[in-house]
Image (cartoon, rainbow, N blue to C red):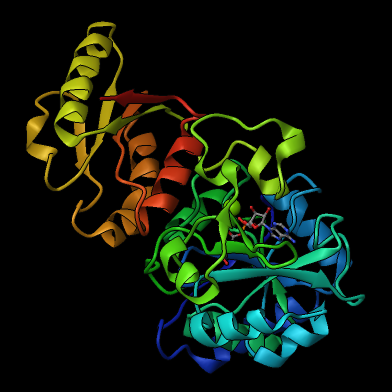
Length: 356
Ligand code: TXA
Ligand code: MG
């Protein structure tokens, strides 16, 4: 990708974004340009969702396969009815409860949504982000904004503007920098066009929270997978591509904590002897148990939201420090743990060791 554009980087206040800067960015969206902006989950690579040319350019810049659909971001509840048809009652319940917030709802798409935005599907994923900069940008642009995570396809998602600068400086028009994002893993993608509703990607809104509202709900098996799922069983095209991957090789070790520690120590030894630069993604509770390698804590096992927030940043840090092999501790698949494990397993290309 050529990097010959003059990218403007604006620092904006996450709570009270400067109106002038938002207006400049919105004007860029309106004339078909690309603006990276913060949401509560990760940074997004935004374009006018209804402008085919702009969407096409965004796919090229990101290096995203054309059959992988992009989430459409809105700032007003009513926009759902322009973008989707046959909106079920339960969608409204979910919108009231979880929007603005990290929940993407997949509905039947209306005719105004270009099929390039939906990756050729007849459905559209919609969400209202919980971030004042994102909401201000969408409102000022006066159009829904299509935005995938603002990383080059396949790389870890960006939780700071610095990550976006690494991937896209010189190839997009504007980057709105409002500091690190709060949640750190992407939104939950929930398909309401099937019965029962299906979680296609676990994320910021948990299975447990959705179950409380919906009763009947399933998690697509690819979302929980410990290995690759054959393409014909894939429901959301995003499921079939390698994702979130650092440059380093990554191995995830899952099971009881004390056994994980033992296994990782054994692996550090083996790989260090082979002359490889090894990194360990540990947790606050376990970080002192590793004596070799570059050891980083990703957060606390007793507060999975800290792990979600730091996950992608730490993966990128290991790369920056030239680590060749990352050994990552698994966490239980409860609450945000489901999203964390989904990202880690995918990032590893399903190199998972289960100790028990
Ligand atoms: O938190 C997020 O969701 C972030 C921020 C920027 O909003 N966005 C994000 O977008 O993660 P992206 O493009 O990296 O991931 C979107 C996921 C993909 O797995 C895609 O396949 C799925 O959502 N998706 C989007 N529209 C869909 C649809 N109509 N049917 C099935 N899956 C869909
Ligand atoms: Mg992504």
